Image 1 (cartoon, protein in one colour):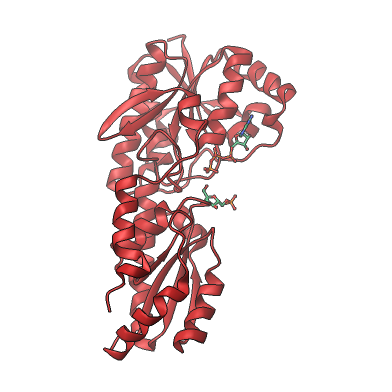
Image 2 (cartoon, helix red, strand yellow; image 1 turned 180 degrees about the vertical axis):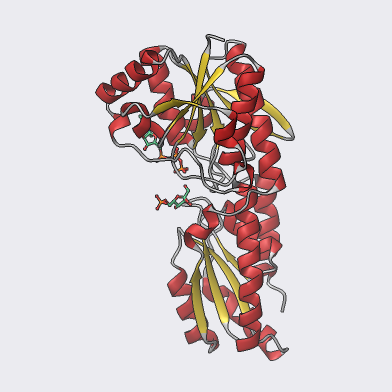
Length: 326
Ligand SMILES: Nc1ncnc2c1ncn2[C@@H]1O[C@H](COP(=O)(O)OP(=O)(O)OP(=O)(O)O)[C@@H](O)[C@H]1O
Ligand SMILES: O=P(O)(O)OC[C@H]1O[C@](O)(CO)[C@@H](O)[C@@H]1O
């Protein structure tokens, strides 16, 4: 066994990274490769935190969120001189193939690295934001949605008991995916995302009519890109509802990985290793309409992610003020 392969996690961690690490070690050995871990993303590449990995390193981690090998955002990796140090470190271990679990920023960094150094990589889209162009699904999204669902279901208990309006702020940066799916699947009255701009005042008449008919609490799910505090103030001022803002925050990044994320981690890693062994040197493994495929960095990162048009149409159907059920 003289060929070597490494894995690292970069950018925001997701539940699903640990199942991916487990599969990585097991499948690397199955393919007669020596697996290595790089600790703490690109920081670890630069600081030579690169260690051989064994079965016992991944025993029992399939149930855990986060990533056992750490992740990071690295300012230094954006500089060519540090990337040269990183390449030297990998070469000193005899490693010329790398799997990167991360977002589009991480892949763009890797693409530069590949062109400068010839070190091959395969990127596995991993971000709870689900905002990577070219793939329908990113590792960790399913678990994050489950965490949000549980949180909103529990907030509903207190919202209904206290007859309050709850404004629940979800992550996703500028992408409304987590917010929209959560609003639909938790039966929210209001969903505010950047992709579907609305004037909240246009809901006033409809919500007043609902209140007149007996509605005595509200659930609003709002993207972190928007101002959830303002929405809560609107419920107080315009509808006379006592309101609370609940920022779900980083709980959305953690938790026991869902069955779906575990399975997808297994498949992503398997096909990524296969691809590297077949000579695909700088690709991102994507998942579209139930099929895996490999894309270039330009296909993935040149254009911003756009919410699926079908999903947006469903959102328009349910969450535009003109569709509000009196
Ligand atoms: N243009 C670039 N050149 C070199 N390295 C880059 C570049 N863009 C990003 N990186 C590297 O990738 C790391 C991760 O990128 P970023 O912080 O954008 O997260 P991400 O991979 O997009 O994940 P997330 O969606 O979780 O934020 C950066 O900290 C940096 O080290
Ligand atoms: O943990 P950090 O670095 O504050 O980043 C938070 C951001 O990371 C994400 O969790 C994942 O990219 C975003 O949803 C959020 O805006």
